[in-house]
Image (cartoon, rainbow, N blue to C red; front, top):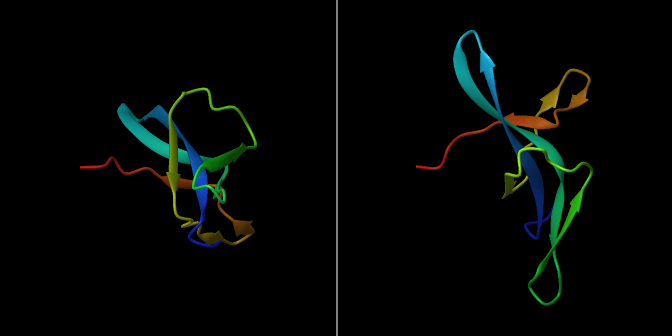
Length: 75
């Protein structure tokens, strides 16, 4: 992906072993238009209402590419 294309993630909060955890699930891409605006193409409608747009950092796993990444809160 070029620097003008970003991955779009839905932020999901959940409980695991009594702890609150957060992860991001890839739900689409965002592409910069010629006028500098962005087109956001979603594969699903996020239920949380919170989206994160960032450079592609997908990792490989044994069967292919992961569609989620751990979410790190901004400082």
